[in-house]
Amino acid sequence: MTVRIGVVGTGAIGREHIERLTRTISGARVSAVADIDAALAEKAAAAAGGARVAADVPELITADDVDAVLVTSWHAAHAEHVLAAVAAGKPVLCEKPLATTADDALRVLAAEEAHGRRLVQVGFMRRFDPGYRELRRVIAGGGIGRPLMMHCAHRNRTQGERYTTEMAAQDTAVHEIDAARWLLGEEIVSAQVIMPRATDHRFPHLRDPQFMLFETAGGVRIDLEVFVNCQYGYDIRCETVGETGLVRLPDPARAEIRSAGRVGTEIDQEWGGRFAEAFDVEVQAWVDSVADGAATGPSAWDGYAATAVAAATVEAQRTGAVVDVNLAPRPAFYA
Ligand code: NAD
Ligand code: ISE
Image (cartoon, rainbow, N blue to C red; front, side, top):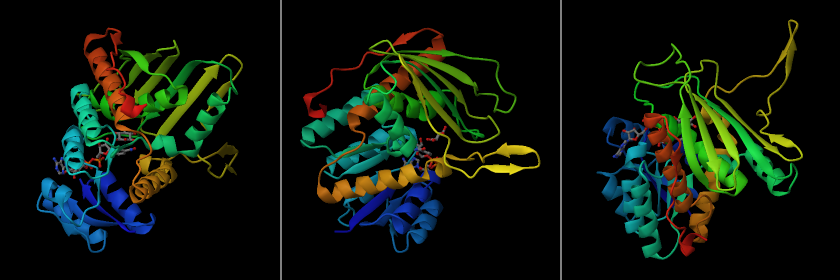
């Protein structure tokens, strides 16, 4: 079976996923695309080799030539697009975040549960990265004893003018929020944000960098530096300290260069390169799950929990307080 995919949003990651689906992934093809920017949609359709441009998003989602939906629009539109896919009974892979408010994410949970089977996978691709998988295997296998602390950094080279202080939580830290929940097997119960001296390499409206502090239900403390204009590269760090040892994310395998009295390795510049393998595995797993008729991967519950923590982090940015995360009870549907 070839899964016919409709892509909503043909910006940066939409185009990368279209290329991936067209050249790398087996068992799928892009049949239709939609974007509020018609010129972008036309270009993306041509790159997909024979996809059509849908009249609008509702037409794409309900179309007969679309078996499954890939949502790569702006974060604020995700919940609306996922709800439309669920209403049409179609499997949907939604780039992170699932929503920007906990209430919108809860609407997705309710709609999926009412449908009666899982349709939603959230694009937390770190769960498919070999390094993160190794971290999880070591932690779950007791290799460092009981986890106590986690130290993380999320650095981007630069961000554009549209990127806001809130997005540091909703769009950037949400990766670590999900990864920490997944690695530790615990929910996050509070968030706090401390603002260090701001970099000059930023647009004036943006607070950058930021220190975020999280606590899990079991008392693990997580510190996360988000620095999205660090200038030097795309640098993702994660170290978990346990009672008998620590485990740290490996730097991506790169050739070591020794030259001119120095030893070094290259640093990735963008997310697309650093997580290329993870994206390939993630999207292939999603396509396979659509063909099998059984959703796998990060669920709408994971999307909701991460959104709720990110929302508490946004409140912590504004107030400077430690903000509690009060999750709704986890439905048996997501057990
Ligand atoms: P982008 O701005 O380059 O692309 C978004 C596209 O969506 C634009 O072309 C825009 O016109 C379109 N769009 C927005 N609202 C729409 C609507 N209502 N209907 C139709 N089209 C709409 O942004 P991007 O960098 O590609 O990011 C898109 C999403 O992917 C974001 O949620 C972001 O968090 C996520 N993302 C994830 C990763 C990752 O590492 N997993 C990396 C980059 C982006
Ligand atoms: C972007 O949306 C991503 O998901 C990238 O992985 C992240 O590094 C960046 O900060 C986000 O804006």
